[in-house]
Amino acid sequence: MSNFTFEELKERVKALSGRVAILTHERADADTVGSAVALSYILSAMGTDSVIVSPDGIPARLAFLSPRTGVVADTDTVISVDVPSLEQLGKYGEIKARILFKIDHHRRSEEYAPGYIDSGCAAAGEIIFDLGEALAEEGAIGELPGEYYSAVYAAISSDSGCFKFSNVTPTTHRRAAKLLEKGIDAAEINRKLFDSKSKEEVAAARLAYSALNLYRGGSIAVITFTLAMQKECGADPRDLGGLVDIPRGIDGVAAAAVLKESAPGEYRISLRSNGDLDVSLVAAIYGGGGHIRAAGGTMNASGPEAAEAEIVSVIISEIEKQGIE
Ligand SMILES: [Mn+2]
Image 1 (cartoon, rainbow, N blue to C red):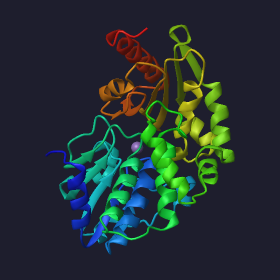
Image 2: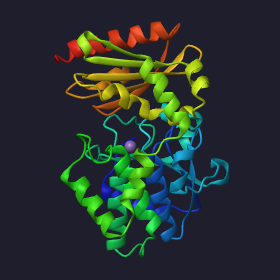
Image 3: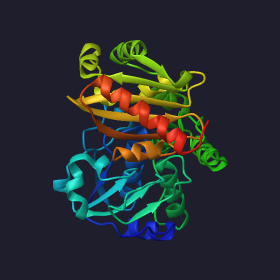
């Protein structure tokens, strides 16, 4: 199983036929959904029908991207976008043999299908943007609708933290500039992505602040968010991804983690690094992955205290192993 070039990606996309299922990763974010939506516009511009399939559904806060969802059973061909591992495909990991190819930007992208991978992109949306441009240039597609450009922009803005993460390149901004020239409402998209919270999410943040613990002289910050806390705030667990910004945003914090209890004894780990620590190596210990400064995995532990103690000790040993101060 191997990776292929951008030229081959174009050819593979043009050759898609029948009804295509575009798989997103679990706990979908605006990059995976926006990229899938944009890709479905590219496909329909070529006369190819497609639906978007998310292993655990698309969270309500991303409904503004208007994904046309469906089920794999009704499709002829399956591809994935922004999905680095089978684990991230959730229940669809079982149909890996049906996945024709994947489009991804994760540095550690598992070889579950042949793929086009550009880890120099801050978002999978940047790859989709290039694909749209290239196909238009060669006349394979005509003018795409405004919804296409909005979806691509949402994807890029989401994974770049509204263009403030270290993964942003001059090319990221050039792509975004071209999207702005298409007349998209970037301010409104960013408001929906970053400045809009449900009352339940605010209640979750309040609980998260009270559960915040600092370790190693304040360089490691961890929040363990139990099932009881999730019940108390009433938030959709899929909308709790932003909680990790709380520990990450504290002055002096080099590594931040949120452990979200997903089932009794099972914890979803979200990791962030503010410096040189490669948290994807911490995530890899837990069967996960991601990027240098943002990664995740799943841990089993006897209880919340044990889970938190374990992640702290693993982060400390990784700091020492990587020789980071
Ligand atoms: Mn992504």
